[in-house]
Structures are given as C-alpha cells and as structure tokens.
Image 1 (cartoon, one colour):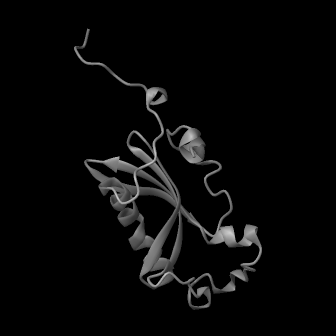
Image 2 (cartoon, rainbow, N blue to C red; image 1 turned 180 degrees about the vertical axis):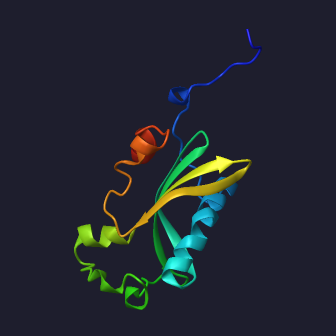
Length: 137
C-alpha cells in the first residue's frame, strides 16, 4: 500500500467558480492578454460559461470594450468576418473559447479559439478532460 489515496479524473466533479472569486479572476486574467493582443484593445470579459474540473478549466467569454459596448471588429484582424450581429448564430461567433490547465499554482491557456462555433467540440479527444467540463451548466 502506498499510504495515500489517489483520485481518478472521473471522480472529480465539475464546478463553477463563484463570480468575483480569486480563481474566477485568475482564470479571466490568464486569457485576457491573448484576447487583447488579437483585438489590439483593452477588453472587459463577459463570462458566458466557466467550468473547472480538477486542474482543468473551460471558459466561454465575450470580449467587450471597457465601457461595456461592443467591440468595433472593423479595426481588428477579424474585420473581414462580415458578421450579422442580429443573427444569434453569427453573434455567437464573437465568443472566445479557452481551455486552461493549472500548473504549479498558475493557470495556463492550453487551447483557445475565436470566431468559431462550438470550438470545443473535439478538445476532449486531444486533452485528458471529461466531456462534462464543456457542457456543465
């Protein structure tokens, strides 16, 4: 006997970090620099989904201007996306998806997608995460 108890990934529950909590802020701060770099502006992130399971986290966020208004994508690398924001399916394409992993007390972005619908659909095939991480409500 090894003298310690191991926990299988299947035993770890998916949880939602409490809005405003330290882990909530750390997760947002882990993905903010890449989003701001891509959009060439400072952003405020509106969380659509944030789930954690063990040392993995999945986020869906909508970047907005600091004042809460929509970002003018005509000034970004996504200017040719030609989105009709009145169409809910196209508006969803503005969501940023991110898979993060906690390593030595710090959250790192493992995978991210922008301007994708259901970008996480195959991530479970490439990373040791459970399907529930992406779909827990």
